[in-house]
Length: 224
Image (tube, rainbow, N blue to C red; front, side, top):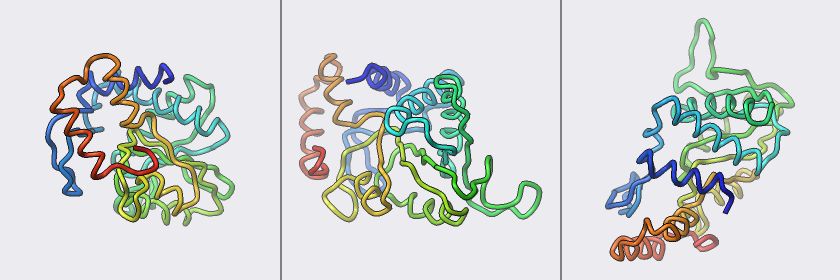
């Protein structure tokens, strides 16, 4: 496993963004872990988060893209933090863009904020966690309405490795198949569990049994 992934897992735990216990998700599933991207609120945390995304995007998609699109609302700070980190780490000037939930009719009018997207732009989408692909259903028509653009790929913080809503594949795999662009994550839950076991920080037999049972029921077949 790459060092930046190990560092990111440690970062998730120290920031309490990833917690283990008993949680009820929006989907109704009872989960032994929970990812809260809203835990990153301090400057140093956002700097490290942006760098982690930038390294993952650089490794997965290289530098041949123009715009980083972060869907409202959580994608707004993620996209800003990442383009700053991208310039710092790789010397590449990427424009950020996000959408508004409501169209603004004065001043900086329209549905977009940040950079405009134009014909020929190559776009990477940045999200926190994708569990159902619903946000992409909203994002896709917004992006395609901007012109003749190309979606290079999508990057999320954590791949939970659960089956999606329409198949036994993961939500990320469903998005990739449906919309025709690659998807990736800084880390997968499978990597998180393996790394924490290796460090001896995930040794509670009861918790491990709940995790195993959860993936037995909800795990994506291709990944778990």
